[in-house]
Image 1 (cartoon, rainbow, N blue to C red):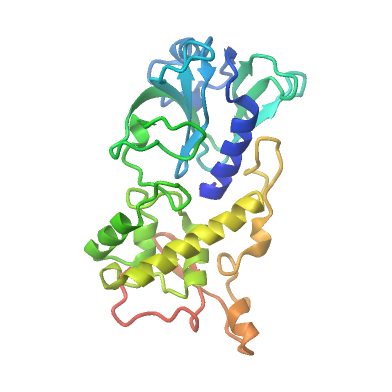
Image 2: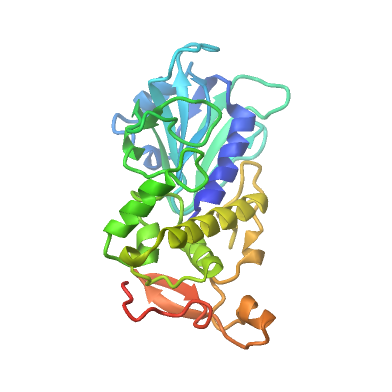
Length: 315
């Protein structure tokens, strides 16, 4: 599933190519991909045609486009087009004369611009993702809703419970530290909780924990401030490097708006490397192998030497 870096790569591409443009047409070949828009296809189309995309904003893995009924208006948006990529969703900006993809679900047409194609296509093989139009509500802290060019202190109602992510300039480290200390759970379980801190999924949790030399079962109520700083710094650093590499692609399901795959998978230190040497230990002349444990019906990868399991471990 695409995680924060992959969604941010898509956000930046959309911001560059469609922000400021008006929606001139909407086609929904497969209504299953707008199932979260309860009023159906015609209402979905009616809420979009004639509106202008003011910005492309992200919080965690949630992506939304604030809409205005008046082109070039400075009035705040009240609605947004929300996109959730799910397991295999793709948002592709393409020319209308390009052949339609096999799993094309929704197609939006935009006002012409000389340096950008005119269509935004939502393609989804597994149909876990989707698009819907929803209302924007004020943010709980009065700060901008997420990462984007605008300073609108608004967020889709469906994403209002999502915590800020480590790449958000308004991320509140102290608030997170206090919430972690108040929990009685394992560290990885906590940082996967999108209500606490968003955008960190299984891949980047394992990578951040490896970088911070911390075990996934470390009890959160034992964390000191330097410990929390270490794990958040590691998560931020890992995801920043992933962004520079275009995200992590293990197959053809995750691509950016131009259809290109990311290559951060080549730089992974822990995730998916069961039985392979730990790079850090190898640099010290050790032959430690990355271990895989079952965790929350998934897998967790760590080094048994660099990341020793605590005696008071909590899963």
